[in-house]
Length: 371
Ligand code: GDP
Ligand code: MG
Image (cartoon, rainbow, N blue to C red; front, side, top):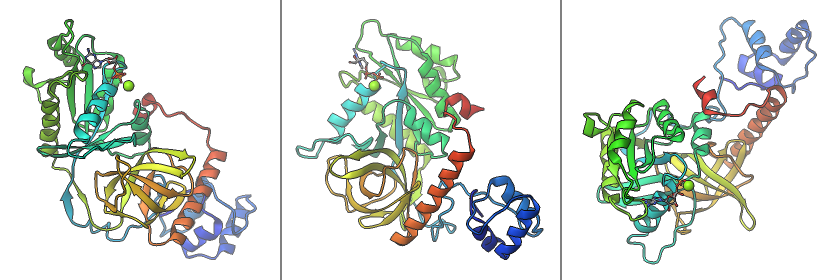
């Protein structure tokens, strides 16, 4: 179980061989190497091929596979968790209006004078439980996360303006959701407009294999006005219903794992990032590694900028204490000590450096993902 670009010394240890033996073998391959030389994938494969009883399992550092979380194999006890929802749709069909309305009316309900901060995700309380909304601009964060195997979204709400048609980004949103096996809920928006034609939208969706309940399908469609807040309770109800069908669970005890939703450098506070807990419970003071960055949870805040002592699955929190700014889609893992965090971070940085040197940089596109 190794990552690419490990050193000759590290590989020797894994193979239970003498580094000198590897150095000699490399020499035979025309490679002059030292103990600390980092090896490329094909060099590692050639070397390991010489050890018949050995087989390579490549670890994905981005997915945190190089970190052993104790108890993870046993799985731990599964507890139910709230759904994580992403809102997608064509430009100007009302995503921002919908998310803003929810944040302003639903999040602050019951929180006296609470003002929500933009942290990239927030939770909404409904009669049937909590719903976590990812509130990241555009589809980029979603694409970035998917490209890196991070799957945090359980349900995709596709917003379609009733006075418009099914547009390219509507189709893209549907494709995204289908590719990641997320159930879709259609929010037919702007029904307050005289030109609104919800029936036309539902028909158009059929051509993209989205069959709504009215037409005998299984996809829920809710007619809303994001501007006026019409039918938001029905939309939340639809999400809760879908979530119940999914029977979402996660291990809520033990060391936390989370996915970065948003990150930035704050002038006063340094690296600040929002993470969505996917496993275990995150606590103040936890040492962690997030992508190639190490840190320790120095402060944890909710969407009201209020301190949070601990956060379990599906809970988004703002975290202070990373030594550098991570990237959206990075996995955060709590480890046992600061030194372990530093150690893993340093190894990942080395791997990244080598990867940058060896691989041509490719841009992530949806097309690329499907290929
Ligand atoms: P986004 O690009 O999908 O984020 O769309 P926005 O939320 O920015 O909305 C685009 C435009 O549509 C804005 O001018 C909104 O005020 C307007 N809009 C959004 N929802 C509604 C609605 O339910 N009714 C009406 N009449 N206008 C809406
Ligand atoms: Mg917008």
